[in-house]
Image (cartoon, rainbow, N blue to C red; front, side, top):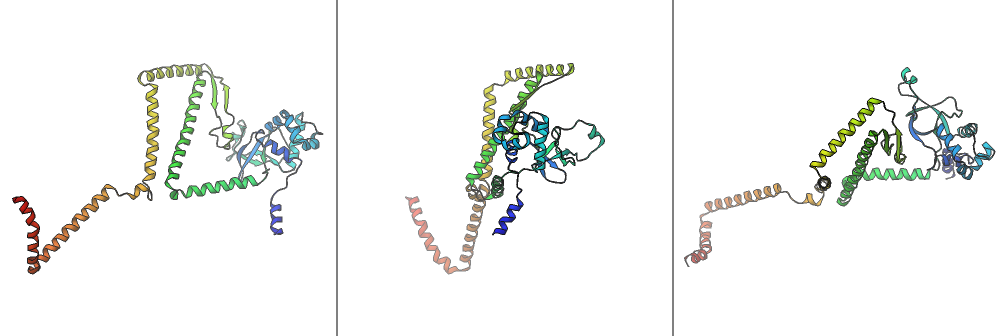
Length: 355
């Protein structure tokens, strides 16, 4: 037992307890901005920029003195960093202790043209740099993983979610309908936000401002939480005279289109159309799910099946009657014995008819 525990301890890296609180602060909710990229020949990694690292250390003296005092005592004599040299000293300490390493942008197909262009602010492919000294303009891949308990918990949730999705055919009908409702609500909110942010962007674009709600919403290099940060971003446009003319022309076209739509369609008509379409989509999904094999609706016979059963019953009745007639023709005695019974059965009806 001790052998397995020893192997487990050896497999997990031991982080320096002096600088580990600083790394946790950098990667916390109020820490620096990070993004994901693919390391050349390896897996996806998270990284940060040296500029953001410098700004965080120089602008958050209170947080650093409260949570990272031991690191400040070792690198800056107990004082918060005040210059770029102090920032470089702290950055070099993190690199030497294995919390991060310096990386360079490495395009997939490097050419002379890509080398001449302006460097990317957030590259999507990195490679380890041979020079492992801290530089303000560099990129730094995060090696610190922190505690593995939360990672194992999240991994268990992902595995459970995948298994539940694979077992969708055996879900009870109420779970399938509930999943359909949740998916429709999620897609409605998502596309509603996309349409809203596009409308607002167009309105501000006409007056010369690039205004985005959730600017990182569709950024593939941002995590789930980072996709909603920041809430908005705006930047004043620097357009020439031709672009100004295009903007004012777009404003005139939009005004005429809105006026024509308002004359022919009211807001209540649009609301009724949206509500009825939404209800039709929900009803269509419920009908598709309840018609699947194994559901209550599938157990009921269809009209075609009922018609086939009726035709089979009629054919069987006809065949039985024909067989009885053939038996009567073959056996005269049996036919004679059945004749008085038929007469008795017909007598009441004849009497009632005569009466």
